[in-house]
Every structure is written in C-alpha cells, then in structure tokens.
Length: 288
Image 1 (spheres, rainbow, N blue to C red):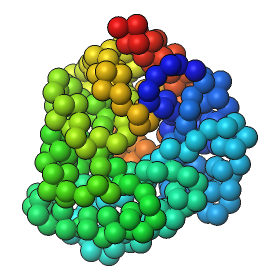
Image 2 (cartoon, rainbow, N blue to C red):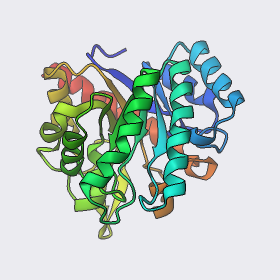
Image 3 (cartoon, rainbow, N blue to C red):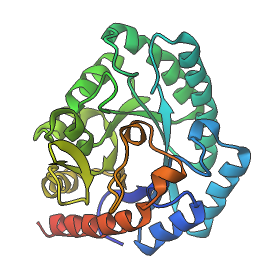
Image 4 (tube, helix red, strand yellow):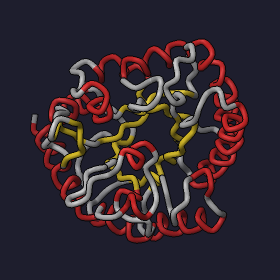
C-alpha cells in the first residue's frame, strides 16, 4: 500500500466485466477501492439485484471499499422530457443501491450539448440534490466532451450556480484533451472548491486527434497534480479510468457511452500498464 492521504482505486470495467476478476486485480495492486460502471453488460441504471449481490460479495471477498457508482445520469437530451424523467427515476434507484453498497458517490453529467441555458439546467439538479439528501449520498458531476460542462472551468461555473453540498465535482483532467487538445494548468485550482472525487486517464494528440494513452505518457501533468493533492491533503478517492487499449482503439460512441463487454476488450493489460505507471508517479510525488 502506498502511504498517501487519499484512496486509490479503479473502475472495474476498465479491467473486465467479471467483477471478481476486477477485484482480484485491485487487490493485487494494493488498491483501496473500486468504482462500478458496467457489469454483465449492464449499466448501473439497469442492474439486477443479482448484480448488486455479486458486487458486494466480490468487494467483501477482497476487502475493498466500493467508493462510487459511475451512473450515466443526464447523458441525455435536456429537451427530451420523458428520458430526463426516466434518468431521475433510475438515479433514485441507483442512489438506494449505492447506499446499500456503502458507496458515497454517484456520478452524473450536464446533458448533451444543445445550447440550453445554465439557469434551466441548474433547475434539473434540485431533484437530484433532494434524492442525494434522502439517501445520504453525493452526486459528483464530471466534465465530458459531449455535454454542456465540457471542461473543468464550465463545470465550476455550473456548480457555483447549483450551490449545494450534495452536488460536487468529479475532476478528470484527461477529459479536457478531447475538447481543447490540452489540459489546462489551472483546471485543478478552478475546480478545487468543489472536488469530491477524481478520475485518472491520459491522452495525447495522435495523427491529428486526441487518443487515450498509458498514464504518464500523455499531455496531462500528473506529477504536478499528485504533488498538489498530497500537499493539499486530499482525502477522497483517485480512480483509474484507463480508456487506453494496447491494440484496440475505442470508438467515439464507446468514449461517449463507455461500458459493456466490447468496451472491456483489451482493458486488463492496458490497465495493468497504467496502474504500474500511476503508482510510480505517486511515489515520486511522495518523495517531493
């Protein structure tokens, strides 16, 4: 185990769809926690009770905390009222299950980019905050290339307007590369007041377009970030969301809606490489 103030984990489908194999991977690497996205080719919005049982049994077997659930909340069209309402209903079910599993965080997004006003979008999170309060969880919003809050700066603006401790930030500095072809040097500072959870992925510009690469070999300055996290005594979770595959290129649709068996193809070896490098970066940061 690394002597760090934060918890280190991995999203399980960035290893495999087999929850026991994913937990074994995490245990072998001395990780503290796992984050759940797809399992048995199902999204957290569509899990069966048997899926939840498997998740809890595997975590108990390998003595790992379930830190978060990567739900696809509001990865939908704001103007599709029926789908939006369905997302809210499924989020509540997801919140109940997260609470049962001991997961504090459930992920969300800021609707597919369509030019809807900030004020209108903020209103949709009132119900989400109420659900979070009811089940004692926190919804962490992630900046994503396809949604309104596509960068950390835009996400900070949204969270400032939401102004609710039950709605916080999921900081993923790698995502910005797909938007601006760079990773802002001030992204952490801008989002810092709202950060409750962190994802790690790396990317570079390859053949003129962004592509995922092994952690530590891309554009994101992770050595600097981890020095900041350690100096700031960040105590949440840092979770590897690899996205890099050694001999497979994820499609635009897979990047937009990650999950399932095809998404997990080649993930194990790529995550192995990235986790080894990630721990080296953290160790160097600890050395000062």
